[in-house]
Image (tube, rainbow, N blue to C red; front, side, top):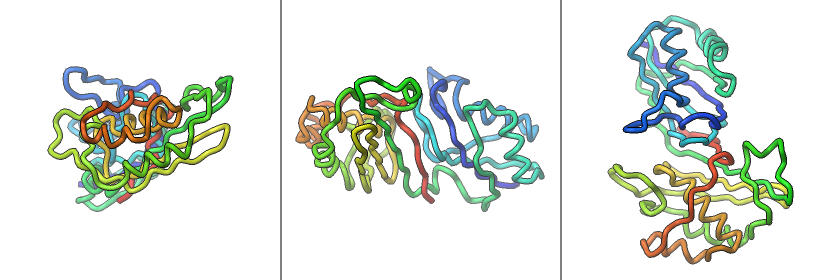
Length: 245
């Protein structure tokens, strides 16, 4: 049995996230589209596809990592070409490699990085509108950076998540970097792992702080359960940038 690792880039605009489970299970997911082609390619109907980070509805990825096991003897380059030939054009396989049997895209991940892109102007760009969040005024980067300091480190992020069934809600954020100019600002979050909607709720809160609609002191109040986080950020500006192993 061979273990194959995929590096995947995708536009999440028209999909219900990487996967959709439970009562709202949907076939219109990134994982399902890839699995359909893999099963056709290998003629193995019971194949399982593991991913490094389950992105949510509308979120994109520069470098999602996934792995599957197969009896197929196809060369990795043949697998890459086959997948890219039959997958929708908004899903691309950037790299295919054979890895040790024990490699697992989710369980072996040591950290994950998301980046959020925001454009700033009085008129939204018609070309960027599907892939960036638009601000009509420049957020206060200094206030956002001060609030980001309160979020870094190891904390219980239960109140920054919509996760319902999780053994532990403690996560560690290694770094939040906020940078940009008067035309585009980006928020980069590097953490050991993310709870459901954690990145979107943190970013939504930071943006509101930058726009002056809430105080940077609210971070401590949210951790304490005295206040709610802001609404999740618009997913069209959010990208899974990297998964480290």
